[in-house]
Image (cartoon, helix red, strand yellow):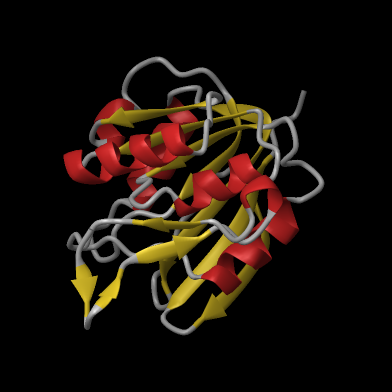
Length: 191
C-alpha cells in the first residue's frame, strides 16, 4: 500500500470482534476514512439497533464504516465502491477477516441504486466531498426501495454543506469534528 510522509495508510477497527485490527488501504484521491472518534460516536448512536441489522456502505472507500458495523454485529453489509483498487483491497480485507456476511459491489453508487433494491435497516453514506453526491444518493435510496420503513441513515459531509433530506427523514443527531459534519437521520413512514 502507499505511504504518506513515510507512513502506511491504515484504518483501525475500534470496537467489536475485530477491535484493534489495523487494515492498510490504498492512497487514492478523495479516499479519507471516517476518523476514529467520529466512528466511535456513530457506533455509540447505532449500538441499540446495529446487532442483526442489514447495512449498506455506499461510497465504501476504505470500508471503515461497514467493517466497523460487521465487527459490532451487523447481520450483513453490502459495500458499494467504484474504484477497482479500493474494491479489490476491501474484498481482500473481508476475506482475511472471514467476513462471509459481506459483499463488495464494484460500481458507481448512483448507477447501482437505479436497480431494484432490497431494504436495509442502516445506510452509511460518506461520499467524496465536493462532488454533490449526497442529496442525489438520498433521493435514490428513497425512490428505489433501498430503505426499511424505519431505517437509520448516516450522512457525512463537509462542515459547511447544507443537505436537504427527503421529507420522510427526520434528523436525529448531528455533530461536527473539524471540517466534517456527520448526521444520523431516521426514516419514518406512517403505517
